[in-house]
Length: 113
Image (cartoon, rainbow, N blue to C red; front, top):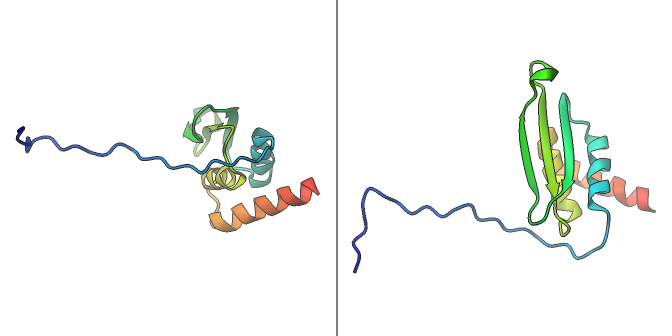
């Protein structure tokens, strides 16, 4: 039997649980419409189709001056509208993320009707 080493601790790596939405819709177009409504200030955002999980990376954009930033958002083929809207609302720094998500979903439903 192996004795535990008090100098090393096993840490559970990041656990990622993601809802898989089976419905068919253009997820990239939805994200672009959401970004158009959110209008993140002083931020350049690139959106691309991801393979496995919704991923958001961000950093400082020195060309945009103080407070300028960039973000890259990967959207997988199974992401739900809610998950995309939530990630983008957080990225944009809105004050009330749940309200922004509901507004984005409602606006998209109205645009499709």
